[in-house]
Length: 295
Length: 273
Image 1 (cartoon, one colour):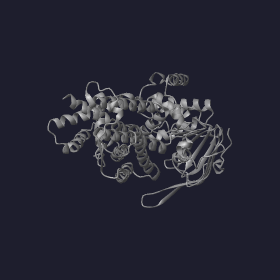
Image 2 (image 1 turned 30 degrees about the vertical axis):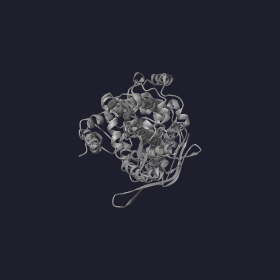
Image 3 (image 1 turned 135 degrees about the vertical axis):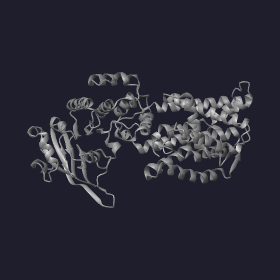
Image 4 (image 1 turned 90 degrees about the vertical axis):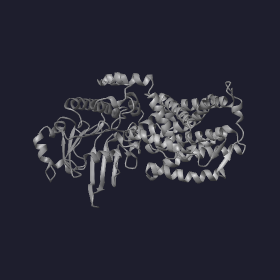
């Protein structure tokens, strides 16, 4: 039983980057970004390909972040420079990323048989390999949360928050909306791609379809975290999102334990999110009507 | 800085495919430090003129100079380094999800791009920022110093508009654009905001364009009163000339098809008083 919870904790932390990226685009920038489905698989595929070619794991993860950053930047540029609707911009990038990821990987699935050496050097806390993963992921996610909190507390982060809150006012105060959106979406997809890379490393393989449903998964994690902690500040919100990722994976572990078929997981996730939207407790740009007043 | 608008052209499509050319060869000069009140009927081009100067609308032709600086090729966020704006809707002038201090920090940072490397240095608003904002608000008599850490969404419309005005004048902009900024306020808040406007404009000596529908304000504030009608300068009065006008007379000019006074025929308008 402990192994089940520890596994859920590890997976939750591996997915925390996805949740943080979703939070950054959806809550901070107020931008419904569908690129995450593509950038998650891109990160996983790129990292798996590089690791299987003998590139050190840290460098492979850094490259995955870079590729995700580029993917997000493409969506941002399509939206801000070409004036393409935010949803379509994400769909266009994600569609293109499928081929790019497949090209990078060379095949649809790359197995990773060896546990990264860095993980084996970590203390196991008396819980074996899962304990080592828990320590490794905890350190990485703590770093991500700290970095994100610091970024959002600078003038740069304040400008991003202003763009999501009131773009007209932000521009009236000298903030370049095109640059802000592009950099913000790029940073978010860098986090998502890192998450894809961590998941691939943890589960021991990357698949070109591993990104399908990532946005819904990320949304679910953000909602669960915000519902539990009801954060009033940015650092708390980031912590809530990470907690949401862990709780969401725990919920999935419980559902599987209760006999849910793995093939039904994405349907269950989608239905849960739909219920939350229908009850009007959630306001998402481009997804739900503001105030729930229309129709 | 002086504002010089020359041979400005701007139009927009109408439903049904027709085109309405609002501004055609429109020229206007506002000397440095002048406080100009702009009136006119709905659709006369008052807010459009402000939007063209601020860069939220792109002119079809013509030039806009702030001092020696050509504005027409710069986007709105770039112009914001020199131009402070307060909009009609109190909800538009600030970020409701950010605190009062965070909004003031955004405005204070207007002159330097926040989205560059420099924006990553230091955490803001910090303690020193807060002390500075507290002093500023106290000096201006704005009762928001004790609410620096509250989200702006919790403020009343009058308080938000007061904050917007403080933000727009923070860092001494070279031009201040006020677009019916008291229209959505109750009489008490209106009086408070307009008094603060007058005080800030006089203290800073900022060149100011203030659009209003209030004839009381038109007859009481500013160095110069101009009236727009269908994208043309319809009337132009110095403060001394305005003293001879009444609200009734101004109201009568709204429907007049011809120019109201000879000063409006001059592209530069009257000299600064």
